[in-house]
Length: 85
Image (cartoon, rainbow, N blue to C red; front, top):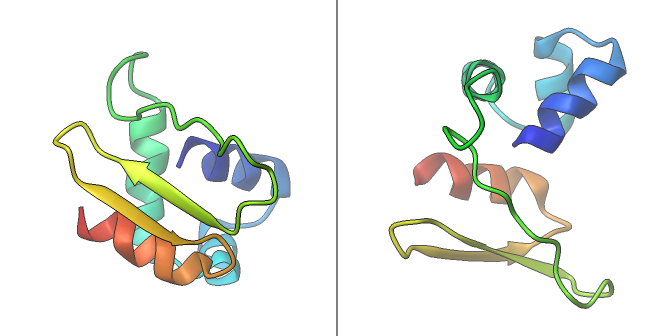
């Protein structure tokens, strides 16, 4: 999430246009922007990139133990999975 917020800031696009481009709801993204301004250790958790750079999937592990694994080529589906949890 933090990476997408940084990409948006550097893009010069409006939140609406940026969200349409990456396939997520603007309200969800606005929440990410708000959370990115919180003190370190709150809101976001660091995600380590996969060990194998050629990996075609990503696995997110939430603090409550929930694991999500999805294709990194399907960003809208991954965004949906993130919103669910």
